[in-house]
Length: 133
Length: 226
Image 1 (tube, rainbow over the protein chains, first blue to last red):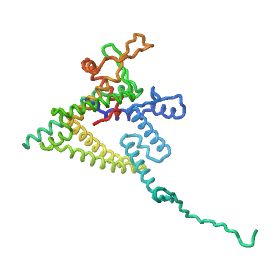
Image 2 (cartoon, each protein chain N blue to C red):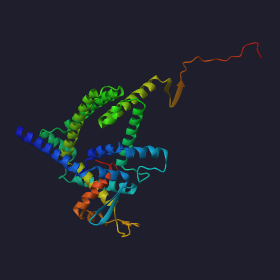
Image 3 (tube, helix red, strand yellow):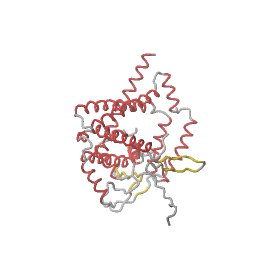
Image 4 (cartoon, chains in turn orange, brown):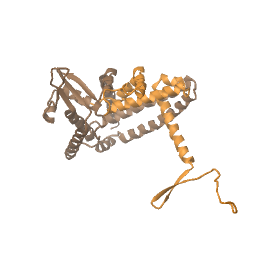
């Protein structure tokens, strides 16, 4: 019988929100001697999911501190998931818009790609005035 | 015929509930804490210390070869049914597995839309009561999604692909398990406990089950799944 990974993910998420793991995570970013796991590399699938969850919750806490989101987000995992998803979608939308509005256009010419910058600002042209040395 | 269909669906639902309850009993917070501490899982069985470690390249390569060999062997045997065959058989009996996939995706889309609304509500710092309504809707959709997923997995549990996955993890358990033969706890001596796979599967069933269970934890997504 396969393990119920949904139940495991739920427990992992609960653990990742724990003060103990959150403080170790924050400290490990600043001090190289502090580690989250016994292994330094070659992480298992569960460890990677756990790291992702810790980082996600840490980012939400930062947003709460900055006043970008209601404190209510911390009270329920459904709020945290929804907020993270909303934020990621917002970022994707923003990136798409930036790409669209970008002044840099790329066009293909034969086999070579050329990047051409369209300058919106005035372009200064320096010419030699006749009679002046 | 109509009555037969209803009975079949109910049986599946009962099986789904049974599997849900059984697996939930086996997992607890302490066990998960232990699993994330390291990429090695040590445990004792019958007074002997065993360990399972995340597979290395060679072990993954070996298990993938074994999996391919077994796949061809199973394909030649008419006793095994492919997922696609089972889907056709179920369809004739009035159970639409492809419909379950569509239902799952539709629920996902619906859930994502509500997620966005809830995220915006939290950003705009709307009252708790507004957020609670949206959260309740998400909870309902999540439960529905889980039931659909479980239903599909129970229905396809007897497929060739499913049996092959179990075989692969069992083979991997044989490859990555070691036992300690040292009596000095300071200086463990880890060795391979079995000469070959046949010897491993003749081992005490409860030990094999535990080993396969832990292998699925430490080696999840490490081998290709069919």
